[in-house]
Length: 161
Image 1 (cartoon, rainbow, N blue to C red):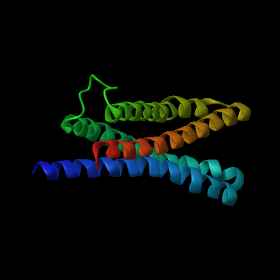
Image 2 (image 1 turned 180 degrees about the vertical axis):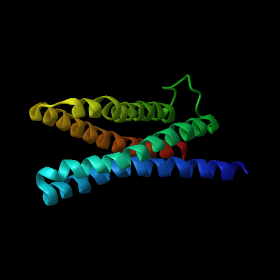
Image 3 (image 1 turned 30 degrees about the horizontal axis):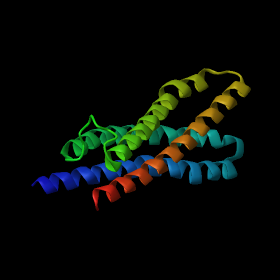
Image 4 (image 1 turned 30 degrees about the vertical axis):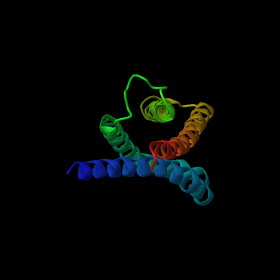
């Protein structure tokens, strides 16, 4: 029964990762360029609608990642929680957690602080500058997400899988 619970927990953790990081990849590589090409100046409206649909999925994914991550770390015999630089596995996990925390912070900063600020701006130049900052933060999260996936692979190697 423990193996079934552990398998389900890993699966949920991986699905949440696919939704969040995959969504970022889709937005940056497919949705933004396609909407600009087809809609030109009106692309922002489409991206706003995509963002309204994607943000709740990303939020739920983050919650699932935190819950399953805590559960999985608690089940792992190598995780002490205190000696974070004890071996390659704990050092890599610590770095991964720092990057994940950075991603979560950027995500919620964009949604809770930056997006309302953009909506309040009346000057087109100020709005455009903040939108560019928001897009650059999505690009940072893209790079962080790929780094987290790389570290996840390294953690598996260090555990002997």
